[in-house]
Amino acid sequence: MSTLKYALFTGCTARQSTPEQMMSTMAIAEKMGIELEILEEATCCGASHLQDFDDFLSLVLNARNICYAEKRGMTMVTICNTCQLNTMMTKRRLDKDPELKARVNEKLAEVGLEYKGESEIKHFLYAIIDDFGLENLKKMVVKPLSQFNIAPFYGCHNIRPSEIHEESNGHENAYAPRSLDDLILACGGVSVNYAEKNKCCGFHAELQAPHTAAVLTGNAIMGAMDNNADWMVTPCPLCHLKLDTQYEHASKAVGREVKLPVLHMQQMIGLAFGISGKELGLQHHVSEVNFV
Amino acid sequence: MSEIKTQKITFKVFRFNSETDYLPNYIDYELEVTHEEVVLDILNRIKWGMDGSLSYRRSCRHGICGICSVKVAGKAILACKENVLSLVAAFGTELVIEPLSIKRAMKDLIIDKGDFWSKHDQIKPYLISEIEEYPETENLVTPQQAEALNEADYCIQCGACHYSCPALEINEQFIGPAAFAKAFRFEADVRDEAGNERLNIINAPEEGVWDCVKCMECAEVCPKDVNPIEKITQLHNMVFSAGVAKNNIATRHAVYFKDSIAKHGQLNEAGLVIYSEKGYGMYKHLKVGARMIAKGKAHINPFIVPKSDKMDEIAKLVKSSSSAKF
Image (cartoon, rainbow over all chains, first blue to last red; front, side, top):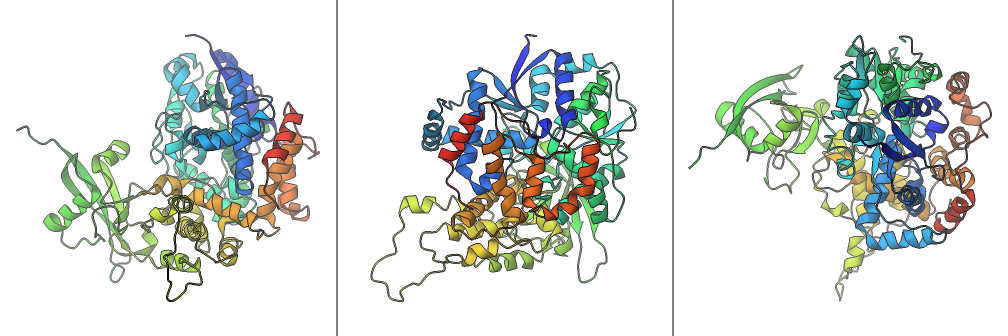
Protein backbone atom coordinates (compact mmCIF):
# COMPACT_ATOMS: atom_id res chain seq x y z
CA MET A 1 0.00 0.00 0.00
CA SER A 2 1.35 3.43 -0.92
CA THR A 3 1.63 5.86 1.95
CA LEU A 4 -1.62 7.61 2.77
CA LYS A 5 -1.21 11.37 3.06
CA TYR A 6 -3.87 13.79 4.17
CA ALA A 7 -4.22 17.44 5.01
CA LEU A 8 -5.47 17.39 8.60
CA PHE A 9 -8.08 19.96 9.58
CA THR A 10 -7.87 19.68 13.35
CA GLY A 11 -10.74 22.01 14.20
CA CYS A 12 -10.62 24.07 17.38
CA THR A 13 -11.61 21.47 19.94
CA ALA A 14 -8.71 19.08 19.37
CA ARG A 15 -6.36 21.99 20.12
CA GLN A 16 -8.21 23.14 23.20
CA SER A 17 -10.74 21.06 25.12
CA THR A 18 -9.80 17.62 23.85
CA PRO A 19 -5.98 17.56 23.73
CA GLU A 20 -6.20 13.77 24.08
CA GLN A 21 -7.90 13.59 20.70
CA MET A 22 -4.94 15.30 19.04
CA MET A 23 -2.49 13.04 20.89
CA SER A 24 -4.31 9.86 19.97
CA THR A 25 -4.85 10.93 16.35
CA MET A 26 -1.12 11.48 15.89
CA ALA A 27 -0.23 8.31 17.79
CA ILE A 28 -2.35 5.99 15.69
CA ALA A 29 -1.52 7.76 12.43
CA GLU A 30 2.16 7.16 13.11
CA LYS A 31 1.53 3.47 13.82
CA MET A 32 -0.56 3.11 10.69
CA GLY A 33 1.96 4.94 8.55
CA ILE A 34 -0.55 7.65 7.67
CA GLU A 35 1.00 11.06 7.07
CA LEU A 36 -1.06 13.92 8.41
CA GLU A 37 0.00 17.41 7.42
CA ILE A 38 -1.73 19.85 9.76
CA LEU A 39 -3.53 22.77 8.10
CA GLU A 40 -2.08 25.42 10.39
CA GLU A 41 -3.67 28.14 8.27
CA ALA A 42 -7.20 26.83 8.79
CA THR A 43 -9.78 28.76 10.79
CA CYS A 44 -12.72 27.59 12.85
CA CYS A 45 -15.45 26.14 10.61
CA GLY A 46 -18.12 28.18 12.37
CA ALA A 47 -19.41 25.09 14.16
CA SER A 48 -22.93 25.38 12.71
CA HIS A 49 -23.42 28.68 14.55
CA LEU A 50 -21.48 31.28 12.57
CA GLN A 51 -23.80 30.73 9.60
CA ASP A 52 -26.76 31.69 11.77
CA PHE A 53 -25.20 35.14 12.09
CA ASP A 54 -23.30 35.49 8.84
CA ASP A 55 -23.82 32.76 6.27
CA PHE A 56 -21.59 34.29 3.60
CA LEU A 57 -18.66 34.71 5.97
CA SER A 58 -19.02 31.08 6.96
CA LEU A 59 -18.83 30.05 3.30
CA VAL A 60 -15.76 32.20 2.64
CA LEU A 61 -13.88 30.86 5.66
CA ASN A 62 -14.66 27.22 4.95
CA ALA A 63 -13.78 27.66 1.28
CA ARG A 64 -10.49 29.19 2.37
CA ASN A 65 -9.74 26.15 4.54
CA ILE A 66 -10.38 23.88 1.58
CA CYS A 67 -8.07 26.05 -0.57
CA TYR A 68 -5.14 25.09 1.64
CA ALA A 69 -5.86 21.38 1.19
CA GLU A 70 -6.13 21.99 -2.56
CA LYS A 71 -2.80 23.84 -2.56
CA ARG A 72 -1.22 20.72 -1.10
CA GLY A 73 -3.06 18.55 -3.60
CA MET A 74 -4.43 16.45 -0.76
CA THR A 75 -7.70 15.12 0.58
CA MET A 76 -8.73 17.05 3.66
CA VAL A 77 -9.27 14.87 6.70
CA THR A 78 -11.36 16.14 9.58
CA ILE A 79 -11.49 14.74 13.11
CA CYS A 80 -14.66 16.50 14.19
CA ASN A 81 -18.13 15.74 12.85
CA THR A 82 -19.18 19.37 12.87
CA CYS A 83 -16.05 20.45 10.97
CA GLN A 84 -16.86 17.71 8.48
CA LEU A 85 -20.45 18.88 8.03
CA ASN A 86 -19.66 22.57 7.75
CA THR A 87 -16.79 22.04 5.33
CA MET A 88 -18.74 19.57 3.25
CA MET A 89 -21.85 21.75 3.24
CA THR A 90 -19.74 24.64 1.91
CA LYS A 91 -18.20 22.43 -0.75
CA ARG A 92 -21.60 21.16 -1.87
CA ARG A 93 -23.11 24.63 -2.09
CA LEU A 94 -20.19 26.10 -4.00
CA ASP A 95 -19.84 23.15 -6.38
CA LYS A 96 -23.46 23.26 -7.44
CA ASP A 97 -23.88 27.03 -7.59
CA PRO A 98 -21.34 28.72 -9.93
CA GLU A 99 -22.66 32.16 -9.09
CA LEU A 100 -22.15 31.66 -5.36
CA LYS A 101 -18.73 30.14 -6.02
CA ALA A 102 -17.78 33.23 -8.05
CA ARG A 103 -18.89 35.52 -5.24
CA VAL A 104 -16.84 33.56 -2.71
CA ASN A 105 -13.83 33.46 -5.03
CA GLU A 106 -14.04 37.21 -5.48
CA LYS A 107 -13.38 37.54 -1.75
CA LEU A 108 -10.73 34.83 -1.71
CA ALA A 109 -8.96 36.58 -4.61
CA GLU A 110 -8.35 39.53 -2.29
CA VAL A 111 -5.91 37.34 -0.40
CA GLY A 112 -4.62 35.52 -3.47
CA LEU A 113 -6.63 32.32 -3.10
CA GLU A 114 -9.07 30.46 -5.31
CA TYR A 115 -11.51 27.72 -4.39
CA LYS A 116 -11.54 25.14 -7.15
CA GLY A 117 -13.44 22.24 -5.62
CA GLU A 118 -10.68 19.70 -6.21
CA SER A 119 -10.05 18.31 -2.74
CA GLU A 120 -12.14 15.63 -1.19
CA ILE A 121 -13.20 16.09 2.42
CA LYS A 122 -13.39 13.05 4.64
CA HIS A 123 -13.79 12.37 8.30
CA PHE A 124 -10.87 10.33 9.65
CA LEU A 125 -13.29 7.49 10.50
CA TYR A 126 -14.14 7.03 6.85
CA ALA A 127 -10.56 7.61 5.70
CA ILE A 128 -9.58 4.70 7.92
CA ILE A 129 -12.39 2.49 6.64
CA ASP A 130 -12.21 3.41 2.94
CA ASP A 131 -8.53 4.07 2.37
CA PHE A 132 -6.64 2.20 5.07
CA GLY A 133 -9.11 -0.64 5.33
CA LEU A 134 -10.47 -2.46 8.36
CA GLU A 135 -8.76 -5.69 7.27
CA ASN A 136 -5.40 -3.94 7.47
CA LEU A 137 -6.37 -2.42 10.78
CA LYS A 138 -7.29 -5.85 12.17
CA LYS A 139 -3.82 -7.11 11.36
CA MET A 140 -2.35 -4.44 13.60
CA VAL A 141 -4.48 -5.28 16.63
CA VAL A 142 -2.25 -6.69 19.36
CA LYS A 143 -4.60 -6.16 22.30
CA PRO A 144 -8.09 -7.07 21.12
CA LEU A 145 -10.76 -5.30 23.14
CA SER A 146 -12.73 -8.51 23.49
CA GLN A 147 -13.58 -8.04 27.16
CA PHE A 148 -15.47 -4.79 26.50
CA ASN A 149 -19.00 -3.99 25.48
CA ILE A 150 -18.50 -0.77 23.57
CA ALA A 151 -21.37 1.58 22.72
CA PRO A 152 -20.81 3.45 19.45
CA PHE A 153 -22.04 7.04 19.48
CA TYR A 154 -22.03 8.26 15.89
CA GLY A 155 -22.71 11.98 16.25
CA CYS A 156 -25.24 13.73 14.02
CA HIS A 157 -22.91 15.66 11.77
CA ASN A 158 -21.14 12.66 10.23
CA ILE A 159 -24.36 10.98 9.10
CA ARG A 160 -26.99 13.66 8.53
CA PRO A 161 -28.07 14.97 6.12
CA SER A 162 -27.02 11.91 4.12
CA GLU A 163 -27.43 13.87 0.91
CA ILE A 164 -24.38 15.91 1.91
CA HIS A 165 -22.33 13.06 3.31
CA GLU A 166 -23.10 10.05 1.17
CA GLU A 167 -20.06 10.27 -1.08
CA SER A 168 -17.65 10.77 1.78
CA ASN A 169 -19.18 8.39 4.30
CA GLY A 170 -19.64 5.29 2.21
CA HIS A 171 -23.40 5.89 1.82
CA GLU A 172 -23.96 5.30 5.50
CA ASN A 173 -27.65 4.92 6.34
CA ALA A 174 -28.39 7.62 8.94
CA TYR A 175 -31.00 5.36 10.58
CA ALA A 176 -28.87 2.22 10.61
CA PRO A 177 -25.22 3.31 10.56
CA ARG A 178 -22.53 0.61 10.51
CA SER A 179 -19.10 2.23 10.29
CA LEU A 180 -18.35 2.72 13.97
CA ASP A 181 -19.80 -0.69 14.85
CA ASP A 182 -17.50 -2.21 12.24
CA LEU A 183 -14.55 -0.34 13.68
CA ILE A 184 -15.34 -1.64 17.17
CA LEU A 185 -15.49 -5.19 15.81
CA ALA A 186 -12.21 -4.69 13.94
CA CYS A 187 -10.61 -3.69 17.26
CA GLY A 188 -11.87 -6.96 18.72
CA GLY A 189 -14.59 -5.35 20.85
CA VAL A 190 -18.27 -6.16 21.20
CA SER A 191 -20.46 -3.45 19.72
CA VAL A 192 -23.52 -2.49 21.72
CA ASN A 193 -26.76 -1.80 19.92
CA TYR A 194 -28.97 0.88 21.46
CA ALA A 195 -31.57 3.32 20.19
CA GLU A 196 -29.59 6.49 20.91
CA LYS A 197 -26.45 5.56 19.01
CA ASN A 198 -27.32 7.78 16.04
CA LYS A 199 -29.12 10.45 18.06
CA CYS A 200 -28.14 13.94 19.14
CA CYS A 201 -25.95 14.54 22.23
CA GLY A 202 -27.29 18.09 22.66
CA PHE A 203 -23.90 19.80 22.42
CA HIS A 204 -24.93 22.60 20.09
CA ALA A 205 -27.74 23.78 22.35
CA GLU A 206 -25.90 23.45 25.63
CA LEU A 207 -25.82 27.17 26.40
CA GLN A 208 -29.03 28.24 24.67
CA ALA A 209 -31.28 25.34 25.72
CA PRO A 210 -29.55 23.70 28.69
CA HIS A 211 -32.46 21.50 29.72
CA THR A 212 -33.02 20.05 26.26
CA ALA A 213 -29.30 19.48 25.89
CA ALA A 214 -28.99 17.79 29.27
CA VAL A 215 -31.89 15.41 28.59
CA LEU A 216 -30.35 14.41 25.26
CA THR A 217 -27.01 13.74 26.93
CA GLY A 218 -28.73 11.78 29.67
CA ASN A 219 -30.72 9.70 27.21
CA ALA A 220 -27.59 8.83 25.26
CA ILE A 221 -25.57 7.66 28.26
CA MET A 222 -28.63 5.91 29.73
CA GLY A 223 -29.22 4.01 26.48
CA ALA A 224 -25.65 2.79 26.48
CA MET A 225 -25.73 1.86 30.20
CA ASP A 226 -29.02 -0.01 29.90
CA ASN A 227 -27.57 -2.12 27.13
CA ASN A 228 -24.62 -3.13 29.27
CA ALA A 229 -22.00 -0.91 27.70
CA ASP A 230 -18.70 -0.68 29.57
CA TRP A 231 -17.86 2.51 27.76
CA MET A 232 -18.81 4.66 24.80
CA VAL A 233 -16.80 5.60 21.75
CA THR A 234 -17.33 8.50 19.37
CA PRO A 235 -15.66 9.99 16.30
CA CYS A 236 -16.73 13.50 17.35
CA PRO A 237 -14.89 15.59 19.97
CA LEU A 238 -18.02 17.65 20.60
CA CYS A 239 -20.08 14.56 21.46
CA HIS A 240 -17.15 13.46 23.58
CA LEU A 241 -17.09 16.74 25.49
CA LYS A 242 -20.81 16.70 26.10
CA LEU A 243 -20.93 13.09 27.26
CA ASP A 244 -17.64 13.15 29.14
CA THR A 245 -18.03 16.40 31.09
CA GLN A 246 -21.77 17.04 31.45
CA TYR A 247 -22.86 13.86 33.25
CA GLU A 248 -23.96 15.75 36.35
CA HIS A 249 -26.39 18.06 34.54
CA ALA A 250 -27.53 15.06 32.52
CA SER A 251 -28.15 12.97 35.63
CA LYS A 252 -30.22 15.74 37.14
CA ALA A 253 -32.24 16.14 33.95
CA VAL A 254 -33.09 12.45 33.57
CA GLY A 255 -33.42 11.77 37.30
CA ARG A 256 -30.84 9.04 37.44
CA GLU A 257 -27.08 8.73 37.80
CA VAL A 258 -25.64 8.48 34.32
CA LYS A 259 -21.92 8.28 33.70
CA LEU A 260 -19.68 6.23 31.45
CA PRO A 261 -16.16 6.66 30.15
CA VAL A 262 -16.35 8.14 26.65
CA LEU A 263 -13.41 7.41 24.39
CA HIS A 264 -12.46 9.02 21.12
CA MET A 265 -12.41 6.55 18.26
CA GLN A 266 -8.65 7.19 17.95
CA GLN A 267 -8.12 6.17 21.57
CA MET A 268 -10.03 2.94 21.05
CA ILE A 269 -7.89 2.08 18.03
CA GLY A 270 -4.77 3.05 19.97
CA LEU A 271 -5.66 0.74 22.85
CA ALA A 272 -6.18 -2.13 20.41
CA PHE A 273 -2.76 -1.32 18.91
CA GLY A 274 -1.22 -1.60 22.36
CA ILE A 275 -0.41 2.09 22.73
CA SER A 276 -0.27 3.19 26.37
CA GLY A 277 -3.19 4.99 27.97
CA LYS A 278 -0.92 7.91 28.77
CA GLU A 279 0.14 8.36 25.15
CA LEU A 280 -3.53 8.32 24.18
CA GLY A 281 -4.31 10.99 26.75
CA LEU A 282 -6.75 8.93 28.81
CA GLN A 283 -5.72 10.97 31.86
CA HIS A 284 -7.49 13.99 30.33
CA HIS A 285 -10.98 12.53 30.67
CA VAL A 286 -13.39 13.96 33.20
CA SER A 287 -15.42 10.72 33.36
CA GLU A 288 -12.42 8.68 34.49
CA VAL A 289 -11.23 5.85 32.29
CA ASN A 290 -10.76 3.22 34.95
CA PHE A 291 -10.28 0.06 32.92
CA VAL A 292 -6.82 0.54 31.42
CA MET B 1 -43.56 -15.13 -18.27
CA SER B 2 -41.18 -15.33 -15.33
CA GLU B 3 -42.57 -15.59 -11.86
CA ILE B 4 -42.58 -12.44 -9.71
CA LYS B 5 -40.04 -12.79 -6.90
CA THR B 6 -41.27 -12.13 -3.39
CA GLN B 7 -39.68 -11.96 0.04
CA LYS B 8 -41.29 -12.98 3.32
CA ILE B 9 -41.35 -10.02 5.72
CA THR B 10 -42.72 -9.75 9.25
CA PHE B 11 -44.48 -6.50 10.06
CA LYS B 12 -44.86 -5.77 13.76
CA VAL B 13 -47.69 -3.29 13.79
CA PHE B 14 -48.51 -1.00 16.71
CA ARG B 15 -52.11 -1.56 17.85
CA PHE B 16 -53.86 0.64 20.35
CA ASN B 17 -57.26 2.11 21.02
CA SER B 18 -57.08 5.14 23.29
CA GLU B 19 -60.75 4.69 24.26
CA THR B 20 -60.43 1.14 25.54
CA ASP B 21 -56.75 0.23 25.98
CA TYR B 22 -54.35 1.01 28.78
CA LEU B 23 -51.26 -0.13 26.88
CA PRO B 24 -50.53 -0.73 23.21
CA ASN B 25 -49.52 -4.09 21.77
CA TYR B 26 -47.73 -5.14 18.62
CA ILE B 27 -49.28 -7.67 16.27
CA ASP B 28 -47.14 -9.60 13.79
CA TYR B 29 -48.31 -9.93 10.19
CA GLU B 30 -46.29 -12.03 7.80
CA LEU B 31 -46.54 -11.15 4.15
CA GLU B 32 -44.82 -12.03 0.90
CA VAL B 33 -43.64 -8.69 -0.47
CA THR B 34 -42.66 -7.80 -4.03
CA HIS B 35 -40.05 -5.24 -5.02
CA GLU B 36 -42.75 -2.84 -6.18
CA GLU B 37 -44.70 -2.54 -2.96
CA VAL B 38 -44.71 0.51 -0.72
CA VAL B 39 -45.64 0.51 2.96
CA LEU B 40 -49.18 1.67 2.20
CA ASP B 41 -49.72 -1.43 0.02
CA ILE B 42 -48.84 -3.56 3.03
CA LEU B 43 -51.20 -1.67 5.35
CA ASN B 44 -53.98 -2.05 2.76
CA ARG B 45 -53.29 -5.78 2.37
CA ILE B 46 -53.40 -6.26 6.13
CA LYS B 47 -56.65 -4.32 6.45
CA TRP B 48 -58.39 -5.80 3.44
CA GLY B 49 -57.17 -9.39 3.72
CA MET B 50 -56.05 -10.12 7.26
CA ASP B 51 -57.39 -7.77 9.91
CA GLY B 52 -60.09 -5.24 9.08
CA SER B 53 -59.75 -3.57 12.46
CA LEU B 54 -56.40 -1.94 11.61
CA SER B 55 -56.71 1.85 11.47
CA TYR B 56 -54.44 4.24 9.58
CA ARG B 57 -54.84 7.36 7.51
CA ARG B 58 -54.57 7.32 3.74
CA SER B 59 -55.78 9.49 0.93
CA CYS B 60 -53.98 10.59 -2.24
CA ARG B 61 -51.52 7.69 -2.60
CA HIS B 62 -49.22 10.03 -4.55
CA GLY B 63 -47.03 11.61 -1.89
CA ILE B 64 -48.83 14.91 -1.96
CA CYS B 65 -51.53 14.89 0.74
CA GLY B 66 -49.14 14.12 3.60
CA ILE B 67 -51.66 12.11 5.59
CA CYS B 68 -50.20 8.59 5.56
CA SER B 69 -46.95 9.30 7.41
CA VAL B 70 -45.94 6.63 9.95
CA LYS B 71 -42.68 5.42 11.48
CA VAL B 72 -41.00 2.26 10.27
CA ALA B 73 -38.07 1.06 12.38
CA GLY B 74 -38.08 4.50 13.98
CA LYS B 75 -37.79 6.36 10.69
CA ALA B 76 -40.67 8.65 9.75
CA ILE B 77 -41.83 7.98 6.21
CA LEU B 78 -44.73 8.53 3.85
CA ALA B 79 -46.36 5.11 3.64
CA CYS B 80 -47.35 5.70 0.01
CA LYS B 81 -43.82 6.60 -1.06
CA GLU B 82 -41.46 4.31 0.83
CA ASN B 83 -40.53 1.08 -0.87
CA VAL B 84 -40.72 -1.86 1.54
CA LEU B 85 -37.69 -3.76 0.30
CA SER B 86 -35.50 -0.67 0.54
CA LEU B 87 -36.52 -0.53 4.22
CA VAL B 88 -35.72 -4.23 4.51
CA ALA B 89 -32.25 -3.57 3.08
CA ALA B 90 -31.59 -1.09 5.89
CA PHE B 91 -33.46 -2.62 8.81
CA GLY B 92 -33.84 -6.34 8.13
CA THR B 93 -36.83 -8.59 7.48
CA GLU B 94 -38.70 -7.65 10.65
CA LEU B 95 -40.14 -4.16 10.37
CA VAL B 96 -41.84 -2.34 13.23
CA ILE B 97 -44.60 0.00 12.05
CA GLU B 98 -45.65 2.66 14.55
CA PRO B 99 -47.57 5.92 14.58
CA LEU B 100 -45.51 9.11 14.14
CA SER B 101 -45.88 9.85 17.84
CA ILE B 102 -46.69 7.03 20.23
CA LYS B 103 -47.80 9.37 22.99
CA ARG B 104 -50.34 10.93 20.62
CA ALA B 105 -51.76 7.64 19.31
CA MET B 106 -55.56 7.58 19.11
CA LYS B 107 -56.27 4.39 17.21
CA ASP B 108 -53.42 2.22 15.90
CA LEU B 109 -51.39 4.35 13.47
CA ILE B 110 -53.67 7.38 13.72
CA ILE B 111 -52.46 10.20 15.92
CA ASP B 112 -53.90 13.41 17.26
CA LYS B 113 -51.94 15.99 15.28
CA GLY B 114 -53.36 18.93 17.23
CA ASP B 115 -49.99 20.12 18.49
CA PHE B 116 -48.66 20.15 14.93
CA TRP B 117 -51.45 22.42 13.75
CA SER B 118 -51.28 24.69 16.78
CA LYS B 119 -47.56 25.27 16.11
CA HIS B 120 -48.47 26.27 12.56
CA ASP B 121 -51.18 28.52 13.88
CA GLN B 122 -48.67 30.17 16.18
CA ILE B 123 -46.41 31.39 13.35
CA LYS B 124 -49.30 32.96 11.36
CA PRO B 125 -49.11 30.70 8.31
CA TYR B 126 -50.63 33.12 5.82
CA LEU B 127 -49.72 36.25 3.90
CA ILE B 128 -50.00 39.26 6.11
CA SER B 129 -50.73 42.00 3.65
CA GLU B 130 -53.05 44.88 2.90
CA ILE B 131 -54.85 43.55 -0.14
CA GLU B 132 -57.16 45.66 -2.21
CA GLU B 133 -60.59 44.18 -2.18
CA TYR B 134 -61.13 44.83 -5.87
CA PRO B 135 -57.67 44.86 -7.48
CA GLU B 136 -57.43 46.04 -11.06
CA THR B 137 -54.30 44.08 -11.92
CA GLU B 138 -52.72 40.81 -10.85
CA ASN B 139 -50.18 40.85 -8.06
CA LEU B 140 -47.15 39.78 -10.07
CA VAL B 141 -44.32 37.74 -8.57
CA THR B 142 -41.24 37.26 -10.72
CA PRO B 143 -39.55 33.86 -11.04
CA GLN B 144 -36.56 35.23 -9.10
CA GLN B 145 -38.83 36.40 -6.29
CA ALA B 146 -40.52 32.99 -6.22
CA GLU B 147 -37.13 31.29 -5.98
CA ALA B 148 -36.52 33.09 -2.70
CA LEU B 149 -38.97 30.66 -1.10
CA ASN B 150 -36.22 28.07 -1.54
CA GLU B 151 -38.76 25.27 -2.01
CA ALA B 152 -40.21 25.82 1.47
CA ASP B 153 -43.61 25.73 -0.24
CA TYR B 154 -43.05 22.06 -1.12
CA CYS B 155 -44.01 21.10 2.45
CA ILE B 156 -47.05 18.81 2.55
CA GLN B 157 -47.41 19.03 6.35
CA CYS B 158 -46.96 15.29 6.83
CA GLY B 159 -45.39 15.85 10.25
CA ALA B 160 -42.37 13.59 9.60
CA CYS B 161 -39.88 16.25 10.76
CA HIS B 162 -42.10 17.57 13.55
CA TYR B 163 -42.42 14.14 15.16
CA SER B 164 -38.74 13.32 14.65
CA CYS B 165 -37.37 16.51 16.18
CA PRO B 166 -35.58 15.71 19.47
CA ALA B 167 -35.76 19.32 20.69
CA LEU B 168 -39.54 19.29 20.34
CA GLU B 169 -39.79 15.88 21.99
CA ILE B 170 -38.22 17.37 25.12
CA ASN B 171 -39.47 20.94 25.01
CA GLU B 172 -43.09 21.13 23.91
CA GLN B 173 -42.88 24.92 23.74
CA PHE B 174 -40.46 24.65 20.83
CA ILE B 175 -42.14 25.61 17.57
CA GLY B 176 -40.41 22.88 15.62
CA PRO B 177 -39.01 22.40 12.10
CA ALA B 178 -42.26 22.16 10.11
CA ALA B 179 -43.74 25.37 11.46
CA PHE B 180 -40.37 27.11 11.12
CA ALA B 181 -40.20 26.10 7.46
CA LYS B 182 -43.70 27.49 7.07
CA ALA B 183 -42.73 30.73 8.82
CA PHE B 184 -39.81 31.05 6.43
CA ARG B 185 -42.10 30.39 3.47
CA PHE B 186 -44.07 33.54 4.30
CA GLU B 187 -41.13 35.62 5.50
CA ALA B 188 -39.45 34.98 2.14
CA ASP B 189 -42.57 35.91 0.17
CA VAL B 190 -42.20 39.31 -1.48
CA ARG B 191 -45.91 40.01 -0.96
CA ASP B 192 -45.78 39.48 2.79
CA GLU B 193 -45.88 42.60 4.98
CA ALA B 194 -45.65 41.03 8.40
CA GLY B 195 -42.61 43.16 9.23
CA ASN B 196 -41.24 41.98 12.54
CA GLU B 197 -44.49 40.43 13.73
CA ARG B 198 -43.68 36.87 12.64
CA LEU B 199 -39.93 37.22 13.22
CA ASN B 200 -40.56 38.13 16.85
CA ILE B 201 -42.52 34.88 17.27
CA ILE B 202 -39.80 32.65 15.89
CA ASN B 203 -37.16 34.66 17.79
CA ALA B 204 -38.66 34.02 21.24
CA PRO B 205 -36.50 32.13 23.75
CA GLU B 206 -37.50 28.48 24.35
CA GLU B 207 -40.03 28.59 21.53
CA GLY B 208 -38.01 30.01 18.70
CA VAL B 209 -35.18 29.03 16.38
CA TRP B 210 -32.49 29.36 19.05
CA ASP B 211 -33.50 26.12 20.73
CA CYS B 212 -32.75 24.04 17.62
CA VAL B 213 -30.16 21.39 18.55
CA LYS B 214 -28.83 21.13 14.98
CA CYS B 215 -29.16 17.38 14.74
CA MET B 216 -30.11 17.65 11.04
CA GLU B 217 -32.82 15.03 11.49
CA CYS B 218 -35.47 17.27 9.87
CA ALA B 219 -33.35 17.54 6.72
CA GLU B 220 -32.76 13.80 6.69
CA VAL B 221 -36.33 12.73 7.28
CA CYS B 222 -38.27 15.12 5.02
CA PRO B 223 -39.88 13.12 2.19
CA LYS B 224 -40.18 16.26 0.05
CA ASP B 225 -36.60 17.55 0.53
CA VAL B 226 -37.79 20.78 2.11
CA ASN B 227 -34.67 20.85 4.31
CA PRO B 228 -36.22 22.65 7.32
CA ILE B 229 -32.87 23.22 9.07
CA GLU B 230 -31.74 25.28 6.11
CA LYS B 231 -34.84 27.45 6.57
CA ILE B 232 -34.13 27.68 10.28
CA THR B 233 -30.66 29.03 9.43
CA GLN B 234 -32.24 31.54 7.06
CA LEU B 235 -34.66 32.62 9.79
CA HIS B 236 -31.68 33.17 12.09
CA ASN B 237 -30.16 35.39 9.40
CA MET B 238 -33.45 37.30 9.00
CA VAL B 239 -33.64 37.92 12.72
CA PHE B 240 -30.22 39.57 12.59
CA SER B 241 -30.76 41.46 9.34
CA ALA B 242 -34.12 42.83 10.48
CA GLY B 243 -32.44 44.03 13.66
CA VAL B 244 -34.82 42.17 15.96
CA ALA B 245 -32.16 39.91 17.48
CA LYS B 246 -32.23 40.42 21.22
CA ASN B 247 -28.99 40.62 23.12
CA ASN B 248 -29.24 37.26 24.87
CA ILE B 249 -27.17 34.16 25.43
CA ALA B 250 -28.17 32.59 22.12
CA THR B 251 -27.44 35.56 19.92
CA ARG B 252 -24.16 36.34 21.68
CA HIS B 253 -23.22 32.69 21.18
CA ALA B 254 -23.65 32.96 17.40
CA VAL B 255 -21.98 36.35 17.10
CA TYR B 256 -18.91 35.43 19.14
CA PHE B 257 -17.67 33.02 16.46
CA LYS B 258 -16.98 35.90 14.11
CA ASP B 259 -15.15 37.93 16.74
CA SER B 260 -13.03 35.01 17.81
CA ILE B 261 -12.13 33.98 14.27
CA ALA B 262 -11.13 37.56 13.41
CA LYS B 263 -8.86 37.61 16.44
CA HIS B 264 -7.47 34.07 16.67
CA GLY B 265 -8.60 32.24 13.54
CA GLN B 266 -9.79 29.63 16.03
CA LEU B 267 -12.76 29.67 18.32
CA ASN B 268 -11.77 30.56 21.86
CA GLU B 269 -13.88 27.87 23.51
CA ALA B 270 -13.70 29.22 27.04
CA GLY B 271 -14.19 32.73 25.70
CA LEU B 272 -17.36 31.61 23.94
CA VAL B 273 -18.90 30.47 27.20
CA ILE B 274 -17.82 33.59 29.08
CA TYR B 275 -19.08 35.97 26.38
CA SER B 276 -22.38 34.10 25.86
CA GLU B 277 -23.03 34.00 29.59
CA LYS B 278 -22.07 37.69 29.84
CA GLY B 279 -19.63 36.80 32.59
CA TYR B 280 -22.08 36.49 35.48
CA GLY B 281 -23.78 33.39 34.08
CA MET B 282 -20.46 31.59 34.47
CA TYR B 283 -21.42 30.30 37.91
CA LYS B 284 -23.32 27.54 36.09
CA HIS B 285 -20.13 26.27 34.53
CA LEU B 286 -17.64 26.62 37.37
CA LYS B 287 -17.80 23.02 38.53
CA VAL B 288 -17.43 21.52 35.05
CA GLY B 289 -14.82 24.16 34.18
CA ALA B 290 -12.78 23.36 37.28
CA ARG B 291 -12.86 19.65 36.43
CA MET B 292 -11.78 20.37 32.88
CA ILE B 293 -8.91 22.54 34.09
CA ALA B 294 -7.85 19.82 36.55
CA LYS B 295 -7.75 17.27 33.72
CA GLY B 296 -5.89 19.54 31.33
CA LYS B 297 -8.93 19.97 29.08
CA ALA B 298 -9.06 23.69 29.60
CA HIS B 299 -6.46 26.32 30.39
CA ILE B 300 -6.74 28.19 33.65
CA ASN B 301 -6.34 31.40 31.65
CA PRO B 302 -9.24 31.57 29.19
CA PHE B 303 -7.42 34.12 27.07
CA ILE B 304 -4.66 31.76 26.02
CA VAL B 305 -5.86 30.51 22.65
CA PRO B 306 -3.98 28.78 19.86
CA LYS B 307 -3.74 30.99 16.79
CA SER B 308 -4.10 30.08 13.14
CA ASP B 309 -1.25 30.85 10.76
CA LYS B 310 -1.72 33.79 8.40
CA MET B 311 -3.78 35.86 10.84
CA ASP B 312 -3.45 38.99 8.67
CA GLU B 313 -5.13 37.19 5.82
CA ILE B 314 -7.92 35.85 8.05
CA ALA B 315 -8.63 39.22 9.66
CA LYS B 316 -8.73 40.86 6.24
CA LEU B 317 -11.17 38.26 4.88
CA VAL B 318 -13.46 38.50 7.89
CA LYS B 319 -13.53 42.27 7.50
CA SER B 320 -14.22 42.30 3.78
CA SER B 321 -16.68 39.34 3.65
CA SER B 322 -18.85 40.07 6.64
CA SER B 323 -21.86 42.29 6.42
CA ALA B 324 -23.95 40.96 9.32
CA LYS B 325 -24.66 43.40 12.14
CA PHE B 326 -25.52 42.86 15.78
